[in-house]
Image (cartoon, rainbow, N blue to C red; front, side, top):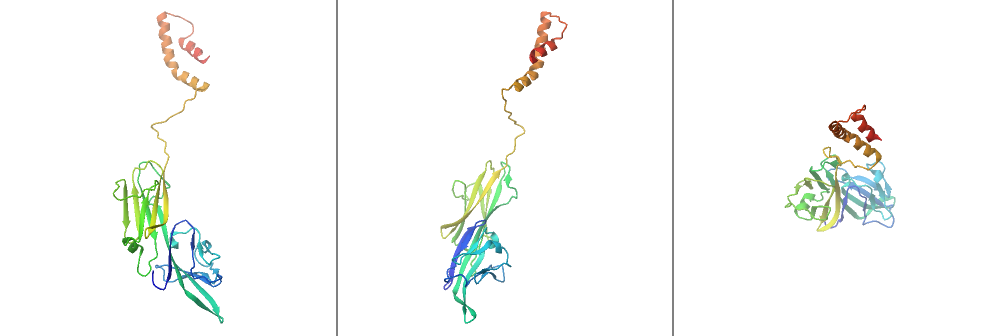
Length: 275
């Protein structure tokens, strides 16, 4: 934290709603102005001006001003990370003058995704998951600097709540320096599984993002299990398939006994079966 600056860090997972507090708010919100900035942008964007939301900005429909002058953001995306500044301006002799100091809120957004565009994978295949923390670089300190100093840490956790380690040969965990990305590669998946990426700040859990890997259900054409019900139609079907064998036995027996009949043995057997 920089001396003389009111600074708050908020961690959120993409897709969630977030509430950014304004620590310098006055008795009402008519004096509140919220400004958004990101290191990659040269100009700040005014979101709220003297208590009124701007409507000519991107994603304005996701923003709202709370009764306590907080800034609410619905369905946070990875593009929402950055610096949010809350200011108070009052009318003094017909001119607006800022009251107090700026209140900074740094929003860090965690986003978990898959390398595959498919919603399901085939059993036995591998999948690579990516966990990236989108973080604002302030005063020359980046997300990677925080990772290296262990102020911020990224962990992968399985659905049993066990942290995964690089020493486990079932997984490959890599960290991409310069982008604050941790990737997880798992192989030979045979059932649906849930993977979670957790973020800790100074050893305190701040947020987590979950990704569920679903295995596609594919029928095995080599093994087809057909349920057999003891119905009348089933028994007749079985009799038809068994008829050639029965006919052959009847013919042999008839010949041995020297039976002679005007009707062929095949007809006798078939009539007997179908009756």
